[in-house]
Image (cartoon, rainbow, N blue to C red; front, top):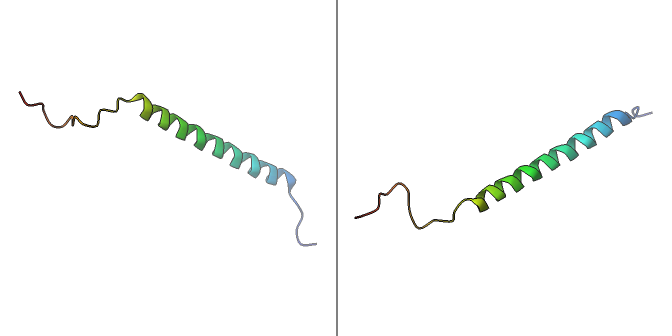
Length: 52
């Protein structure tokens, strides 16, 4: 017998990986949503004061 299977450990590992994948996907969606909510004003540089 090579090794004794540990089904509970394998199940926990699968669930842990699934949860990590879901959290990563949610984080990416939130970042994308935050970028879309920000104004796309790329022409005006906030570091440079406007000329009068």
